[in-house]
Length: 581
Image 1: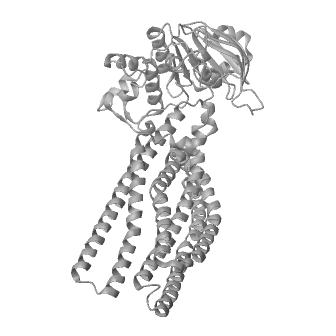
Image 2: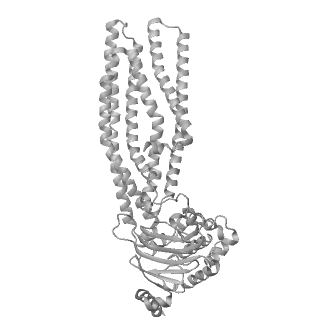
Image 3: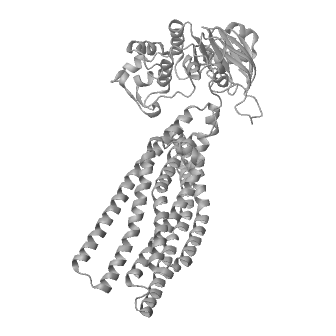
């Protein structure tokens, strides 16, 4: 996992290496300062140094302190640059990977979970990386150098560390072992919290329509409380670090002062001096503090290990389908063929979403698809641009298996307006240019006229420069559908698919849109999924779907004679219209 995410360091290798070098320099100087102070104290005690010698030693100490500060500051700058850059690259790599996923891959991860991985998880990994290249290098070096210097300065007195370090190490191990399970649980609960936020925000109108604000607040509060309890439990355990650390520092200090004082008095200062005791106390504090820092790094790395696992899980995910070795880059026509197609959304699914589909559509035809909820209408059309792959059989566009096309080529030749119409933040014009970024103003206006969108766009004060808010919340459902249709028309595709995307417009506007299709894109194959018979009755062919199968095909008049399902739908809708009159 580490090797996988380290590939995202790339251009930030130099700041990473510089951070390590700065930390080495800082550690060496920090260990040298107590040694010089100890020698100065002993010299003052024994030789009664002149003030000039003391000032000289003081200036050396000030210079060393300044250099140490400089190394530390530069290390902070380079570590921040390296870790922030690493996180930026990792986030971009993760986002780019998601863009290669099929719907099947995305179904494996919830959208809330993917958001958590790109934000919270990468945040923890960034923090862990900063600590690794800075503190995780500085702390062990400083601890090792301090132990060496303590033995040089204090001799047998340094044996106190043999007792104190294991005590502190064992205590920190127990603290970490008990805190980790709670930290691990938090990440899984973050997904649920984000899911609650996402559902509430995207379904705000429904929530308010059913007056369920209190229910949603309670649901979110419960998820937030759950995370709070786990964090409190973990933090309470980790908080034991401080008293344990203080206990070990004071125990070491007491031992050094008592034993050191005895050795000075008993030997007359020949075995040990005041300077050595001062250095021993300083080195002891450094050793124990660095050990505590190492324990905190271990906690952070353990927490981030769960984040790394979740990130690499996405990076290691293999797209359900990729381009073939020599993909075809031209779609010749809009003809569509389904040959003995069976399809299920996952290998584990017990039932096929589509069964025994045999269908042949000539280029330029207008095809209507009608059927009840769950009959397989949307599943059928999602196989054409290869949003999903068939389980058995094959789908052909322009006489070629869709698996043989370059994905970008196939999808640029198939424009699809799904049931859930989505507009992005930005102007109306920017949204329309998603269909064709090179489209001229004249082409944009023409597409909007055909989609019956031009008039309402011009009713806005800013016209085509009107800002669309996130999710298109400042336009109606019908307006949103017409903008999405115009965007699809700008692609001038070989195949245009409307998945119940005129449900929010009136029948007159619906008819005008379909009439525009005949004039604007006569050679384009047009597939219209609809609930209203009126939306498909003038189609060249109508497909009746039932329980994942094609129940019947034919024209409007033919199906009225041969298909009971179609006749029943037609009579229900016509009857309803007569009753209303």
